[in-house]
Length: 192
Image (tube, rainbow, N blue to C red; front, side, top):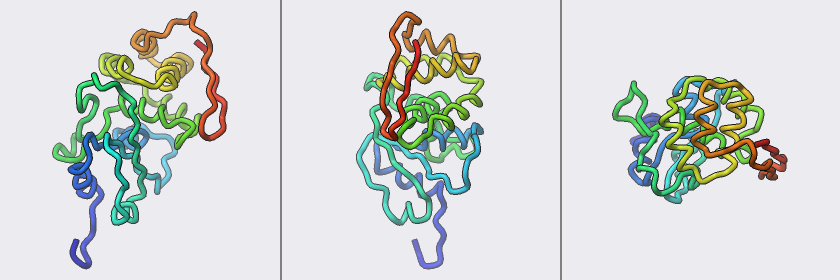
């Protein structure tokens, strides 16, 4: 950057994507960029994901508040880049999680960066998911909490894709209740 130049978020993200395998915009940020939001604050940190361990450089985080997650949310058998596409208005831009993947990424952050109430409110706005894409992601999802939250809340919220989610997650109603203490101290109880 030259003096008096301005860094643009999309260009900076594209630059960072060249140094990290699987780098993409995910979770709540991806949902918001794809039109699903709930009370999004003006300076909400960008949720960035990737497969490698990195520290976001200060020149980036000083201008664009962000957090980076290297969670193994899906099994290695999931095809690389599944559920990731640039936004339609920037076909050469950075990869952004499609709604099905972004939803599961957001659910993985519940109790860590994401409050239960806000996650549930956001999920309520995700009415039209592609069930075939969601099924593939749920079948490859390694996190029990994510699969259970997805199925349980989809049914409670009467979302049109709830039955497909239960079938894909392999969850039957006769399985036992799942309880966990989240990093924020909240106890999460999910009924079968």
